[in-house]
Image 1: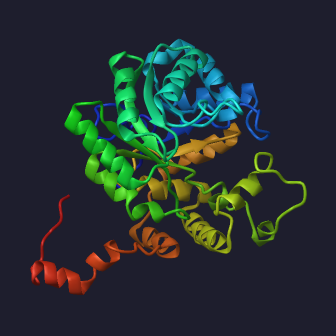
Image 2: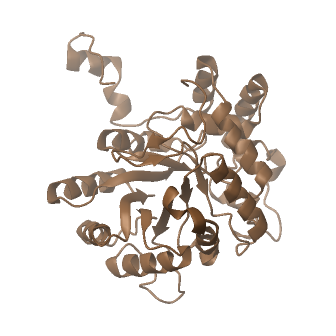
Length: 356
């Protein structure tokens, strides 16, 4: 990594001119509606600490803690709204039994944005992101509805999350050809445990000008070092929302492989003299395609520790150790195309330097 960072070492979000902090504050932990979040006063301390240190990039969603996240964020941000970059998402169903209360379609998008604006107590969203691909809505409907919201001044920038790379690239091409507002952000799960996005999504983002916003850079807490092999066994009485351990297990992070990677993170952390969480977040920051990992803290102490990742400068050997421990197969066609036989066939033995 090239030098230490700080929250006010701002970066451009994708191919836009929007300046954002190199770590985004995730607010899925704002509110206790799901059984494990932060109470209002603690959420306020987390928010104030992040912003007072120069942080300006805050991520939420219309469904986080059943709307409490947006309401608390709107309250906390009231006196400094214009200096903040507030990102929210839409897709998830909010009214059980109503088939149109979820999905990517125009009706849900418009309804969700209007509701988010009310909860956030603002008249515009800096970044609206499609939360998850529903596999049903035509891309033209999504893009045109998004562009209409931008034209109306209710949304400034657009992004997308948890969507196949081929759909994102198709959407970006259509937006460019039709002169609609482009996508500038790609929010995806990315960590030392979840690197499969390096096969298609990360290269696509680099090529098409999407700033990558990794969620769960600590892999549901596994990379913080708090779990052991004993946690691999299911426990009686746990529920999907009520137990963080159960979420880590159901997400695929809490596995033998995940714990093995966490052990290497601990080794590097010992060399650095810092917590494993800081090392794991610093690893995502070392990727030039990443704009800002999203950290979600339930306590001020967790936030303080995670922000310490900005001070961590991983050595080349440490990066190599982490990469080796977490390596994945890129699969076809990438593994095939970078092999020595194909490189020789394509370039005839010539050495060609790739674009910077």
